[in-house]
Image (cartoon, rainbow, N blue to C red; front, top):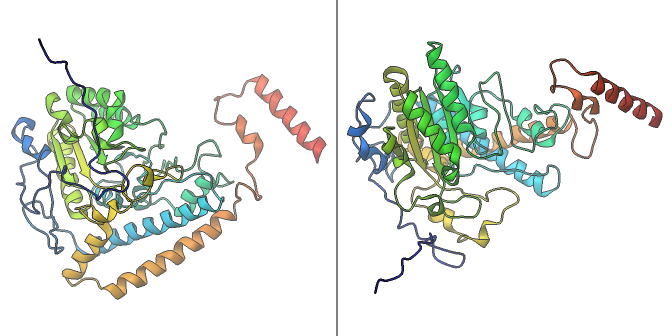
Length: 414
C-alpha cells in the first residue's frame, strides 16, 4: 500500500500577530562574494545566483571586491534623490487619503534600486520601469510636477487623462510607459535590445518586475528570447517579499532564488542586497559592462522589502506582522547610505535633517504648482475633445462628426 502524494502549500514565516521571522532569507556577509570578470561564461558563475552580493557592512563600511569607487558628490546626490522620492511618496499618499487623487503606490524601502541602477545607465539606454520606479524617473530628469499632474489627470497630465495614476512615461528620458498588466515590460525590453543590436547601436535596455510577476508567462517568454538571441538587456526582479497580498513563496521563491531562474537557459543570475546602494550600483555596472562588451542578458534579483502597503487600496496588516519592515535584516536603504556617508566623513545628522526639510518644501511647492493645472474636482479641466486625438493617423469622418456633435452640445449648454 502506497501513501497518498501531498500538495505543498507555500506559507509565510509570520502572520499578523506573530513575531517577524526572516530566517528563510539566505544572507551572505558583506564583502564575502567574489567578483568575476563580466565576460565569464554563465556556467562558471552560478554561485552569484545563490549568494548575496553585499558591500556595506553593519557599520556602514564598504567591504570586498564588489565595493565600487564612487565620488562622494555622487553618493550625496544619490541620497538626495532617495530622500526626494520618499518625500514625494509621503505627500502623494496623504493626498490620496484626503481624496485629492484616486490611487497611489509608494516605493518605501526600494529607493536604492532605482537610484543605484540609474547611476549606471546612459541617457540613450532604454528603461522599462514598473510602478515602484518613481526614483528612476526623477533620476533621469522627469519633473516631479509632471509626476503629480499624471496622478491628478489634469491639463498637464502626460497621459491626457487616459491612464490610472502612477502609470508614468517620459519619452525624452527614454522611460517607457508603465503598464498595469504585470510583466509586459520584460518582452518589450528584450525586443528593444534585440532591435538595438540589429542596428549596431551601443545601447542596453533594462526592465523591472516584482517577485510575484515572475509567475506570469511574459517573464518566461522574455527569458527564452533573451537566452536564444543574447541581446544587451538587464532584467530585474525586485524581490520585496510580498506580491499584492501573497508571500513570495507563491511565485516559487521558497525553492530557489529568483536569480537562478535563468540558469537553465544559460542566462547568468546575480542576487544582490537591494537595500545597499553601493552593491546595487556595482552589480548593475557589472551587468551593463557584460551587455555592452561581451553581449548577452543578465537576470538580477534585488532582495529588499516593501516598506509600505502594496497600494493605497491595500491593508498589509491583514496578512503580515505590523512591525515586519523594522525587523527586516537588510535595513532601510536611506539610513544605510546616510550611515556610510557619515562614517566616511562626508555627511552629518544636521545636514541630513536640513536636506530633508528642504526637500519637503520642494515637494510642497511642486504640489501647489501641480494643482494649478487642475484637479479631479477643480478647474481647469482637460479639453474633452482630446478623446478623439491619438487614435488614428487620419481622423475618419465618423469621428469628425462625433466631435462636432460634442461641440454643438457644449455650445448649447453654455
